[in-house]
Structures are given as structure tokens and as C-alpha cells.
Image (cartoon, rainbow, N blue to C red; front, side, top):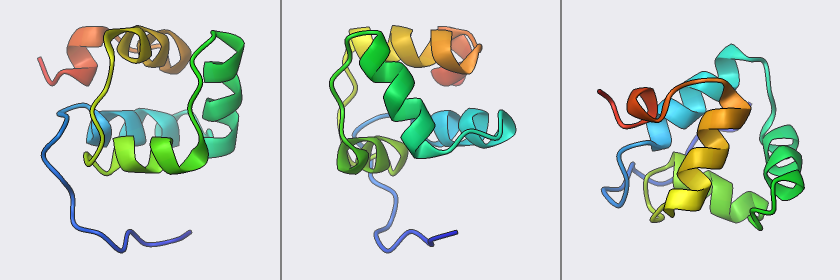
Length: 80
């Protein structure tokens, strides 16, 4: 497991929840990226890493796709 080199950012509030939900499902970033691609969300490994590190903005389309793939609610990802 690689450790994060950069401090967490402040560009989204879902990054940590995405990371937690992905780990809970035993899913690697590569697997999540493949599922996003199937749903028409074009994101690379760097983009996902930045999303989880909260240093990249998230679109509404990405939010919904992540919620579906990780089988969690949008409210959960938003910390509600």
C-alpha cells in the first residue's frame, strides 16, 4: 500500500468517503476506474487519486456513478 505524499486538499468533501467505501468493498483503484469507464466516466488513475485526496473537483455525473458503483448513497458520500 502506498502512502499519500500530499496533504488532503479542500476541493471536495467526498474523497475520504470514496476511499473508505472502496476499501470496504475490497476494491482497488484500478477496478473502480474500470467500472467508471463502463459507465462512461472518463477518469485516469491520477484523477482518482486526486479525487480521493480531495485535491480535485467532482462532477455530479461522477458523484452519481461513484455512488452506484460503491453501493452507497450520494448522501453518504456527501457526509450526510
